[in-house]
Amino acid sequence: MTDAGRGLMFRDKQATPAARLSQISNELLMLASDLERTGPPEPCAIQWPDVTDMRRALKRYLRMRRDREKLFPKLFGDPAWDMLLVLYVYHSAGIPMQVSAIAGLANIPGTTSLRYLDLLIEQKLITRAPDPKDRRRIWLVITPRATALLKQWFSALPLMPE
Image 1: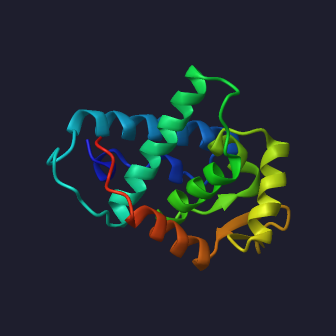
Image 2 (image 1 turned 120 degrees about the vertical axis):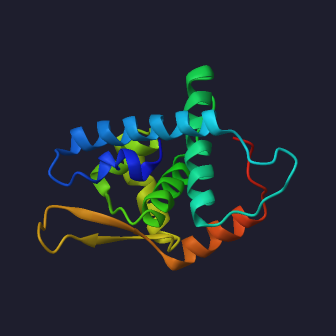
């Protein structure tokens, strides 16, 4: 089933943050299942990704990293990279990201995420933006510089087989 046919559950703006995180997790699992069923269009062909393909491949890459963490707990970690990729996926889908949500989505402890968010801001890869409707809420915004660098990195790689 396509995303349009199933509907994007994680766009439910009325749900609590915990419910939205659960919905996002379920949606990503459904997307991963769809990818596993469909397989690659041409196994030997190298395809350069458009934005949709890039988002799909990045989601798969993040899922693979979570699977690796289950197999090899506490051996590998790259929190800044994971957060940047999560932000890019959400940004490219037009979905805003709250500071409070990034740790869970990147699968890292909250204190670690705050430390690395400061580093990403220092490197001018993301910014924080206050919500004009709720001053308690802070949005994370990926910068044009980060988007360009990620596109440059991604364009050098063929799509991974699905």
